[in-house]
Length: 296
Image (tube, rainbow, N blue to C red; front, side, top):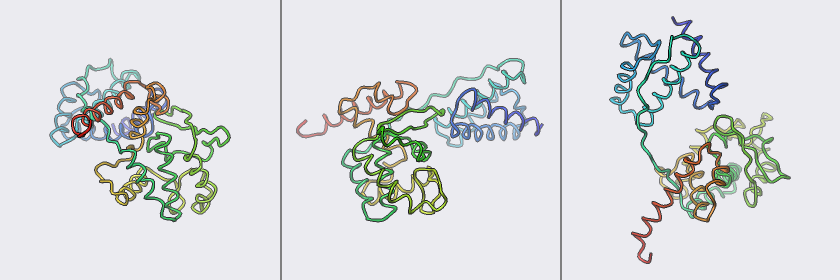
């Protein structure tokens, strides 16, 4: 059974990557979730082929009792439903089993920084060091171009079009988009590439942002940088996360009159409903402002 299981999982990975167009991060998350499902089935002496309604419900209940969030439960369910669909398509089960609907997901509004806090975060990098100049370039690009953490870390030198004032970004599902590279963002990035980066690149890497040792920057590195610079800027760690600059830019640009469709293209959202979250966030902040400001 183990050999068959491994063969099916390999096929499932190809299905998610090639047919569904999922990102490598999503695929890795689904694989982790499937391991939990297989462990559950083994402990309870359940045949995991196919996933059945009553067993999946028990699995999600057990995960909930272990304190998993609603977002995690929804992802577990989505992973198992995709697995179920794959087994049906490939003929490993006679027909796709009916599974319970996805658990409701908590609708959390993204946290943001004020424009002043963004400036403080960027200013905290100006310590004259090589890493400080690198961090300033990272924050300028992340905020100025509205990038996801994974997009920042996957940028290469070849993604930059200096003459066209643009940068090619590969987002979720390997969808590409072009974002403008203008003003101080371009100036700081150009200085980093021409002066700072050569002092970090010891291996002839093509990645844009490098660590102290010259290797590719990863999400974990980006989080550590943001947390360290945030402390220096007096911003609580609880308000910092790898996507906070992206969320902040979206809200700031909406306040300045940018339309939703243009913002959707800039951020690379597949659905306009995702972009609309920032409208809700901005309205909520304005309501708080109106209630609390003594001169509002």
